[in-house]
Length: 332
Image (cartoon, rainbow, N blue to C red; front, top):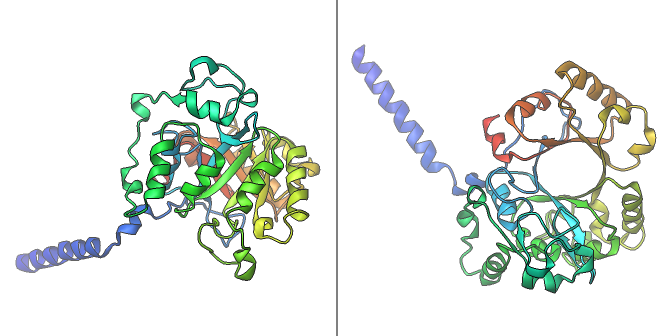
């Protein structure tokens, strides 16, 4: 009997080793999925949306933060877009050049008052020691010198939206774009350049470098006026392209107000602030009410910053969780 147990143990260990060897390297980048007891839309899992990239380990809104989010398995990154004096969409949260930056004589200047070239020449990120994340595993792209140069030149700089698209189109990650300024034509034109020959219209599948024919690109904003204008453009100027696959979400700070305010649900869905001061049962009751009233609209919560909050929201009927700890999906 003792011998049989030893043989069984050896066999089990050997089986584990074989499975590990057979596991493809690409699984290291397999998207992590949150587990929930109920999904608003059964055909999809709850999106793991990395707030300003993997901000728990990297400097927010920086290129390393976005690449790191892909490495830890996020489904989407969330980013902030601002518009420069010369109408270039750039990725930065604040309206002034201040947070984690050294900008010489541009320090504290409004982004809307300076050109993109001035920002590139004078501004560099000051990376805190605890935010200098390792992205080497992602950047090993043999022979792709254009991508390597893009990553090298943008690693410590404020990114243009155009350059970020050039870089992330080599990954499987999606993008939630928060419009901080009014810039409808500027950023939509950059998106249209991903598919200049309208290949997505010919075969509306996962065409290379189009973020799954724009299905993995979402627009969010606190301004209904901005979103209305984006919606009109997508249905008029871009109606013959696949940009109408883009979904639009209104950002809201109060989940209670969403229940009876039907005018807030004129888009594809709503992203609302997590009411951390509420009891679990109260939040669940509110979410079930929203699901009952607006069953066809998608519902996303923001911004979850610790595993305790993550535990609370994972049982809610949500389509996405905007969070600062995308790696925590591995624990669920």
